[in-house]
Length: 310
Length: 174
Image (cartoon, rainbow over the protein chains, first blue to last red):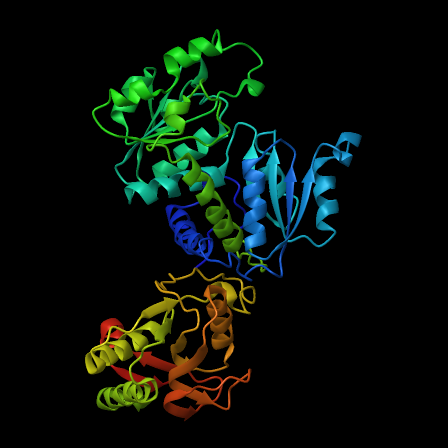
């Protein structure tokens, strides 16, 4: 019983069954990571290229560590300092890497849809490590996996995604993933950072962060992505923090204790205050830990060399 | 289809294997039992139940998944989804008894020993199997405790059924 897909491009095209299979496999890897020898020989015949056309700390280290824990050989490639700056196309770059007998590709790209485009041109399995403002599937999987660890089955649970929904690939992947697991999703933030017609995805929209926090079991707070905002969408960071930031006082005023998550990197004092990010309610570092297990599961399950019969 | 062990025979064999373990391990002071996932644990569950009843000691008992250690992980176009590993004790320096239902090529046991050594360094490792398919070994691995030895050809299949899973206790050759 393997996955229904050959690539992990987005959560949109995988099934609920696929997500459950990934979680079950990640449970095993999480256990492997707690042993003195944190390594298994499963992928020692596999070579994986990490191709990052956009900056990353967590995701890249997490993928690299996951590959090493699976005994795969890895090569790392970043756009800066490569032939991409000499004008090489994406397909040429990847074909050249694959010519060196690489089996799988982990790719981050600033253009939405880049991994789909690439999947039409190459045979190797592709794992999307974030494409533009579209999807970031492994982040959504590790977020849901972390929630499942705290809450059990997510069906009927209420999740609020708060902050810069417009520019966030994490938001979109989270929405697809949580809905496939039966959770209810509300997005919250300033109207200028919430895309029009997002209700058509079946999510609720809330402009009052406090009300969203009151409603939810888990709040996944997203980073304000200033680097993707080429025109001002709110007046100042201070104002944003004042009206839409999550702080301790706000959490204490709720009638229940909710779980706080953040995919990182955190803008402390903007979308989330330090007294929240470092509190007992926050599972931000659990998310990072689970990220390695989830990525090991995805790499392992997609590593089968034979062609998937379609 | 041929019955290798019927209900009564299987129960006699289980009793004998458990008693052999008691004979060699006496008080089970440093002994731990580890069943192999997924099929071996139905057999190890039974052995452990008999041992605990007969000796009155609570022998440490774990379950080991070996999926990530198999040498055929990429041999077919399906990839195996693992079953849980549950070894809630330290195996360092312990006498480990590995338990699986059918010993065939020996590759599963090779993988199991690698998986075991990644958890810790046992003092010794023994192997107990219910059915030993002789003349079909591909690796130099032999059991220490054997339920029954059968001569089979590679196209045949040995199926071990358990009451808890298949609704009957028996071993058949297909």
